[in-house]
Amino acid sequence: MSVGKIKQRPLKLGGDDKRNVRTQFGAVCWRQHRDEVQVLLVTSKRSKRWIIPKGWPQDGATPAEAAMTEAWEEGGVEGKVRPVCLGIYSYSKERSDNENMPCVVAIFPIKVANLAKSWPEERRRKRRWFSLKKAAGLVEEPELSSILRKFDPSAF
Image (cartoon, rainbow, N blue to C red; front, side, top):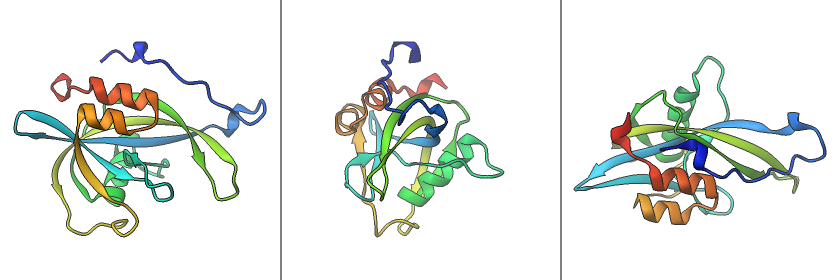
């Protein structure tokens, strides 16, 4: 996958203060199902749209480890994370005070070994496997959609 060909959307930074941009770490949780690569999407807590697991940096954890933690908490994913950044996408996080927070998300691949029957956010989220093409069509962020469409686990 060539990250250079992904078009980055402009971010609204809330004035001229670029320090307001936040970094998150996300996971492309994947499996080989028959002859097809599938990815696991989860629903967001508020709008219930399909997203990848993602969250904030964690003290003492690498970005890949933080992505693995989010995959566990949001989707019950058990597996192996690779410390290879697949790409970066941007979005505006809705906050409770009706302000939007611009975020960039670095994405790491996780080969799923198992999905737990019970996980921390199971009552607040749904999870479902999708083909790469279907997942790319379900997520709202164009850069994430492009990364999913081009995802090739044999490349790492």
